Amino acid sequence: GGDGRAEPATGAAPARDTRAPFRFDYERFRRSLRHPVRGRRPGEDPETRARRMKIKEMMKFAWDNYKLYALGKNELRPLTKNGHIGNMFGGLRGATVVDALDTLYIMELEEEFQEAKKWVEKSFDLNVNGEASLFEVNIRYVGGLLATYYLTGEEVFKSKALELGEKLLPAFNTPTGIPRGVINLGRQDGMSWSWGWASAGSSILAEFGTLHLEFLHLSELSGNPVMNIRKVLNRVEKPQGLYPNFLSPVTGNWVQHHVSIGGLGDSFYEYLIKSWLMSDKKDAEAKKMYDDALEAIEKHLVKKSAGGLTYIAEWRGGVLDHKMGHLACFSGGMIALGAEHAGEERKRHYMDLAAEITSTCHESYARSDTKLGPEAFRFDAGTEAMATRLSERYYILRPEVVESYMYMWRLTHDPKYRQWGWEVVKALEKHCRVEAGFSGIRDVYTTTPTHDNMQQSFFLAETLKYLYLLFCEDDVLSLDDWVFNTEAHPLPVNHTNFKASVQQ
Ligand code: DMJ
Image (tube, rainbow, N blue to C red; front, side, top):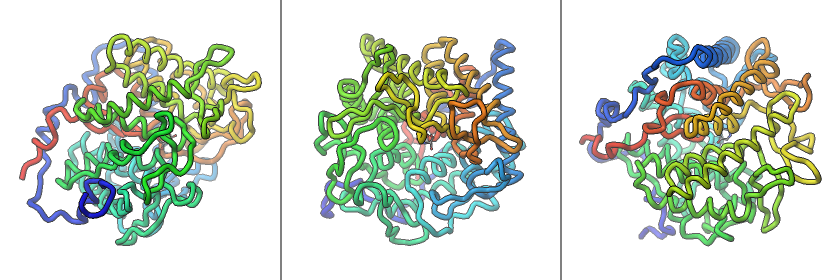
């Protein structure tokens, strides 16, 4: 770009668009969908239906308790029966409401959906102050609002998404266009730097690499140009083809050589393949970057344990750490999703790899006393798929393993994935359900675990949604029509070319 930036982002879009107003043609968009959003409900066996209904009941229970004890706070604390605010969302409230909206809608919990909608209309305040994580606000709030707009056509969700999206733009005002990790929602200049703990003012791969899906939709709905920060990444040299987790938003160079498909790296890879899918397979640059990255990951990080379990290790400046985080377990689903679109031979290879990783993640659950998996598990000194450190034994209602079960089920219809999902439902009921909601546990290797007193918003957005979809027919939120953001909020595939559905 001519403004001195290193080929920025098509620039931070103007705070207010001065051109002719656009109108997104919602009806036209709905007609372009290949399946009704909540499916056609053909005849199915009673057991599948009963299981789905059980999961719906769990969602109602999680929502009702949040509503009763914590409405307007970010999360429910189910043991002490109060709300939690935390410091991730910079003054924004109602994270659980916004994260739960589309799940309530898809499950046909109509009354509860109306309660959530009413809160968004009447109480969701965007005029707030405080430091927020750009990534968290984007995936949970922007993603949740966009998905609910596309599912329902209700304007309130669109206007809140656009208003919030605009508040995030100052984060992109850096020399490279790579955004900062933290943004102060209350300040016009958005003057804040990244999280203190992220290596010396650097931005995190999984954070700045997990904006594209949502920002494309914000752009399409508003008519404002999209930022393209991918160019910087495509150009910078990658050690062995791998993407390290930390990058300087000032110089555009890597700050550390730690590579992980788990925390800090994870959803960057996910958003490459999903950008391609969301573009109706037109964004060839994203596909190529995904293919190359996966090849490098396979070459350098994918290993097989002595006991025959395939896992993805982490990489620290060339040295492997034989550890897999729970977060990394989303990759079974991602690799399967990408495999669907590879050539015949590659497809078989990647489907096998996806199945093996998903099975390893299942082992991390099966080998625990609670049948829930630890935060991280290791493959060293005779250990296979178990946590070795006390600090890695907890389970906080995370979705990644059931997310992979859902994709593997949709793409293979192997009944074991439904069985594995049902095991998770039973374990959640037994160990995480308490009197007033669901709680994470501190140690998956004891049948009398201590609860952490937190019902994470992603439990409603993701864990319960993916479990529910596992027991639905494939046309409910069909993969032909929707791409799930990293918080499981469905965003539509661009079948018709969004631009054409925008009228001046
Ligand atoms: C969620 O916010 C998202 O899935 C994110 O990609 C990773 N962390 C949590 C769930 O574990």
